[in-house]
Length: 294
Image (cartoon, rainbow, N blue to C red; front, side):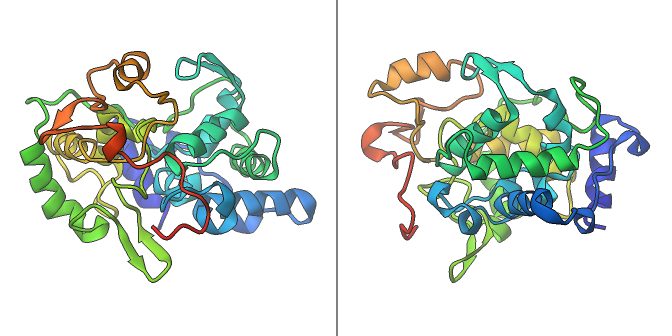
């Protein structure tokens, strides 16, 4: 059931026949032996990142917050759909990227840590993703990869409307202040802004990508119930908040905007409610050392 609803939801949103979406192997099918151990470690890193890779987890997010159902859900950046499309050129870092490098960038920008290339953490995630992708074609983007495309908003996104959507729909899970929900040290739902959330270099810090993800996948259990305009508005509001610094920032806010954020849907280095987003004095650092109490 955990897989079935997202599959049908993404199929409806993207105009894809549900029968065309891949069904990755179940966890029970993970093999025994060292290969299976690596797969299980990769699964643990995806689902409980701070516990499984604490030295590289600089916030309160886990990989499965975006890669839903441990990277299985179509339309929520499923790992099985991405694995066979690497190596590939990425404009973001202007180089050919292996799958391992792509996962490292997810850590750098969304988890706020930098596991080393060739290290056990990235190799374990690669083993898990490769296992999920068995049977998928190489060099072809299968249906369900990434997020379903979202239509342009009818009206320019608006903070006031976005805040209203957030308060009505999102706050119950992510907190009135957007800082997520915890039970002691257990993170129940992730923060969407602030020092324990993703940084300014993350894909989710681009309003168009956040809107597409929200429209296809949120709220959990009722995906697709927000209108296109509501998804844009709430993404605009969420990405108009303070969050950790872009790790590519080298001291010049305008230069960082010009080189890495010069696009319509980035609010980095823009002024919101009298505050310049990304301004060093009011922006949390990119990485917080392990053991820090958020």
